[in-house]
Length: 83
Figure: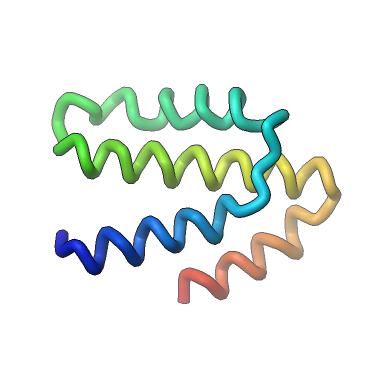
């Protein structure tokens, strides 16, 4: 993965997880750890870190959206970021 690709992925993760509240950080962190635990010994550290950040941002963002009763609307918005 090139440095440019890494930067683009980190920017996407940042946009997806923007506005994550502290109240959801611990739960999202635990979910990200569980998500990454099965592959942590098989992949490079940089990829593991990226997976962890992505899972944490996505899970925390979904919790925020669920709490705000905006889950469907924001999922549609985020899907546009991925296109």
